[in-house]
Length: 289
Image 1 (cartoon, rainbow, N blue to C red):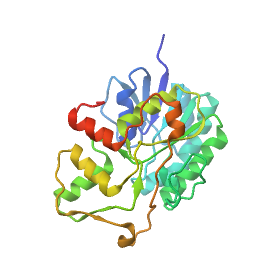
Image 2 (cartoon, rainbow, N blue to C red):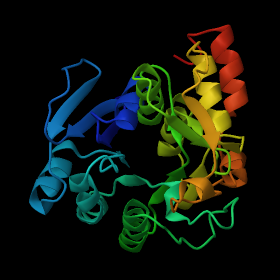
Image 3 (cartoon, rainbow, N blue to C red):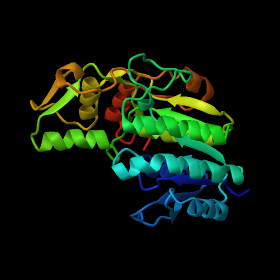
């Protein structure tokens, strides 16, 4: 029996590239925008600009994926931000025409952090431009395809390779720059390997609507930073200090923690806490690798 076909958008990005590693029982296709990834026997890459509807239609008609996991369009650049809405619109419309299961990756940043922990029924109230675009893209997806699934992960972290936030932390340490981590900003970080396994499980699931995927631990950014340094076997230098959002004068969400009871009732994949990942990683560096 031939494997099902999976299309991963943003295959050269952090999450997309990690999903590819775990999708061993799929015929995997992935997209990139500017820079072709290194060729691999595990995946077939395609260049596609999701802002161009005809390109999107042609790609999906050619591949005819059973499932699409849409990870593309991050908050790493202004260009990416401006691509979020047209990409969601063009992809979901094309997905409906070929009857593909559409899984749209959103974010906990659709909330303002004033009323956490948030359930799937909570009303989005984003503070940032990225959060606003993601909230609107959720509406676009579910309006065009009521059978689609919108997944809201929390802060995504990993060691191999290191995630963007932890890389920022290490750069500050190595350059001996002041690094401030907030004690009053709470998230529910999710280990990237856990997220990948959960998404691939959901690719074969029938659940629709909105689903929160996060780790089973609410933790502030200071404690989370210390946990990442522990996993990396790095000490905490004097230039890494705790502070608060109020002291910084910044406008940031205080509590973006997510209620994951719905996901835990649906999934076989355990939603590991930061403490569990840290303990296992320190005992065995190849944990879930």
